[in-house]
Image (cartoon, rainbow, N blue to C red; front, top):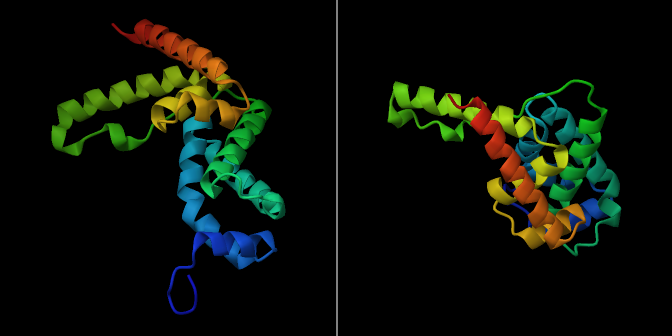
Length: 183
């Protein structure tokens, strides 16, 4: 926000940030921090997500002068977050389970249904956590964020066909893992 409380245009902030204006970049971070964090949680789980978020935003600041604007800023930040998540995930020494947002629990459904949904969320999160990082990222980008196969392919630097194959394998593995946990 400017001194008068007027929100500045994103393109103006991007241009200022590209020239090294830390305040402009701070405002961009403020706008995108939740998006970056949510993606990080979905890719690596809640334990590693703060580290991924912080590292991704640091990398974005360092790379800001090279941001050409060919893609939207949000898409560019997604790409940095995905790459950072993969890097930090490889570095992590312990196995982490994937947690899903609380959005699967409807408080109006009553305590019994809420309990069932919480159990299903835990099972799904555990199963997603057992997918390979490549399967997990394709599944999250396609099924959670609703990206097209082409967008997933561009984001990950793979062909659209490879994205489809990975998604198919991820869904197949996820079904098998969920079937194993079912009574």
